[in-house]
Length: 211
Image (cartoon, rainbow, N blue to C red; front, top):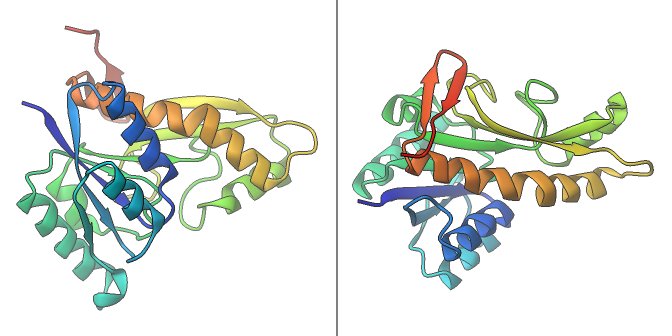
């Protein structure tokens, strides 16, 4: 039985494309991209999903009086679709506790830094890379982690380091982190989940050997 995956998006969907490409290569560990849900209408991620034949849904944040109300609507939609794994791929809405309670250790997020550096509330998009450059780090990268009720605070599944190069701008660094880290480790983490190879103990995620 394939693991049914929903990808939550808010923008262009580059990480979604990495998952679509991995599915096309048979690299999602038996998982299937069953739905793409956007917090905004008209974003390019929805076009990517449609081109790949993945059903799309829009649950606009602006239609709800609070993040909690939107989260509850999202959980209802995910349950109706029989989703087993939720992937946040550039999803720009802070979800409330109902989401984590409905999908414990079954929500993955990709963050463009080596957590716990440059993460938490306010750290998203180019801002993460601006802060890394301002601090003068020599290595940055990306992290895939389980989502908990603490922003960017859930157990870490995979990390990939990426060098900071002389003359980098936030934009060039962002691109390198996507190409060398995010687009690689997000599909890998999804595959490990779908193969039942992730076991969480406290803050530690153990990667089990192949059966």
